[in-house]
Image 1 (cartoon, helix red, strand yellow):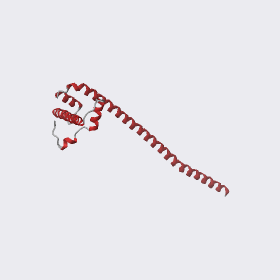
Image 2 (cartoon, rainbow, N blue to C red):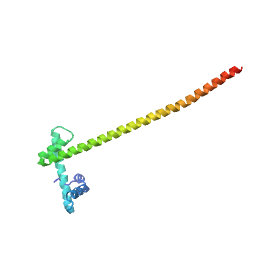
Image 3 (tube, one colour):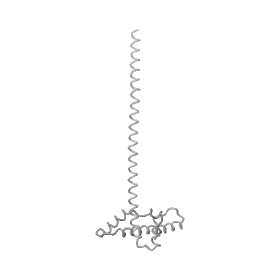
Image 4 (cartoon, rainbow, N blue to C red):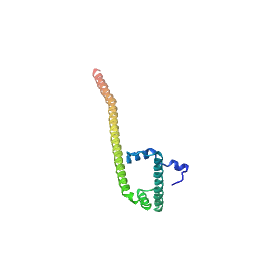
Amino acid sequence: MASSSGNDDDLTIPRAAINKMIKETLPNVRVANDARELVVNCCTEFIHLISSEANEICNKSEKKTISPEHVIQALESLGFGSYISEVKEVLQECKTVALKRRKAIFAQARQQQAELAQQEGLQMQQAAQQAQLPAASASASNQAGSSQDEDDEDDI
């Protein structure tokens, strides 16, 4: 197991997550606190082991980002090949969920954009109508004034 330095203490799986997994996996079994602590330490060590191996594979392939394929190769090279089919299933589920979220976000953004465009159109119509009102009343008063001037000329 990794030595327990200050940095490693911060890099653990939350105990609540481990407790939830234990309860879901073994609902009718009582697990002692030291056993829970051991599970946390084992999970943390497993993650460090897989991520270190995936990082080495990533570096060998001259990539800067660890991809799911690097993790799968790490599992295989460390002797955890039996996990790969489940890992691929979970990866596919994650991709499906991410795609649905992206589609929902884009649909929401398109709807907001359409609503904004509609509001801007209404505001422009209202502004145009308000601009026409003073112009119409000014032209009406000009017409009334000019017809009154014509009437005045008739009186002379």
